[in-house]
Length: 633
Image (cartoon, rainbow, N blue to C red; front, side, top):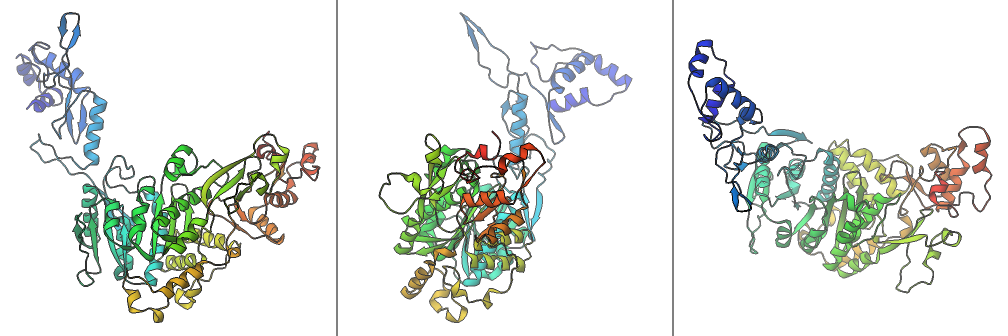
């Protein structure tokens, strides 16, 4: 009634006779007490409502919430000496709930929170309020319904990031490769949000997978169920938290059925066993690693996406030390440093469960760090994985780096391990110790080639260039002649460090997921994991721009790769850095080849400086700091 009166006085155009009849009567303000604003004629009341209440109102769904001066909200009294002053508190009434808000900005934020949660039905309006407009997005032939502000996790329950499409495609390819090894497999998306990832698994892989989508938020679980129905998938909801959880039998579930659970991620991974587990929390995933490795089946896969890039990329070093127990600094290879930091935490968590890991893929891009590992059960693989966690010595002058040697003996001069002699020519301490980090390989070439085959087979065009670059990086070669063929044509047993049986070798006990493999198969897997380290790609990379010379034109990157290859070194590009070069050449030789094939920018006396350096300083990268080498000082 109050809202109608205000609309009548402020908005509705009236004729001259109607104004005279209305303005001739005295009426009180419906939003002010009588002692503050006495009853007056219509023209004065109209001006009062328009200038005071209507001008600073909050609009929502065609309605306006005007400021109220009635004693609806208890104002705190002010005590001055022996007198008490009670100030009338102006406030707004929420049209959705019964809350009273004092400030206009707080009221706008309060309404926005209702909208983000999908609460738009008013309790005080008889007319039905329009429902929130949920947007339907499509990715890889999968439709998902999202709420407004779906790209901001702090403002919505159904978080969906379109920039993580590449991450979802990489995980899908890894799952598709595992689905070819053994069928059916039980896979878990521990943090479902909208359920887009689990829906893509079930929609494309069909009977090869049994998908379980989990989330601890009730609104997200409801959204996942709606998205399952939107994609014509059957849903089985399970919210049990008891230890006597009863799984679904092989014949009880249709191929198009997705199980949706509402549990904490640690709880469901403690209760059940899975062949494939993906962790994608908001931030770090170290809090869920112990639970993930406890019940994951042998030769299963655990993939995790870390989005705490501020700590992993050395912008918040104290956070990296707190979460990962690792000391890092900002270097030219900071993205690979982040990947090795995550893998080290994964290896330690797996070793606590007497399991080892084999790194299949490690990708670090702008928004995330993705790590995919295969689980090898047994104390021997666990010991082998832990031995690959070492400290890194990094020179702060020339940015040369090397992993510390194995052993517990303290060296008298650890600087001698570095190829450079900056410690002898520069004052003070020139190097820092980083880590502990993963010192093993970051890629499995055979697994990556099969991922590329699956990407081509399912038409995932966006991820194919990245996979081709990673395959070249894993082989440390510049060749881009890929033979994309079916993995069944290859001898799968010879894949790097992974024992994969052909269909005619599969026993009946191996097909059923969760059963232990025999001792002979375990020994074969362990032997094949201990491959020759000479085939592994070199650790870390160099940025060609960071080591460039002022006043000199660098050669094109592809030509520079050919020059290093002609010099007898293994060389490739890297996905971590578009201008990065992964090579086994020392930094001194790297700079020597770069200097040899660089040309002066312009003629004159200024170009003669870099060309007439003495041999001991001629871009060995050891006698000058990196800033001086680049000519910035």
